[in-house]
Length: 93
Image (cartoon, rainbow, N blue to C red; front, side, top):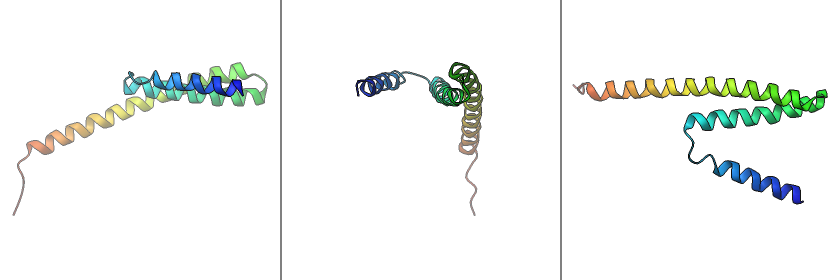
């Protein structure tokens, strides 16, 4: 019971620490943390939780960074299209 309370408090502190992060930092942190946990679980089943966590962390870091770069490019393309649309005169009948 005490362990669950401690984990809950720790998780709340980690989440509240994300409030001042950029979207890139939030994406990379959440991707890395999630895959680290998954890697540790898979590694524990395979017999080496530490190695699984390390592999999961590396994969999550790279994957979430690439995902963030994609989202940034998507946002830039949207903004460019929006600006072009505002600059064109309305076409009407």
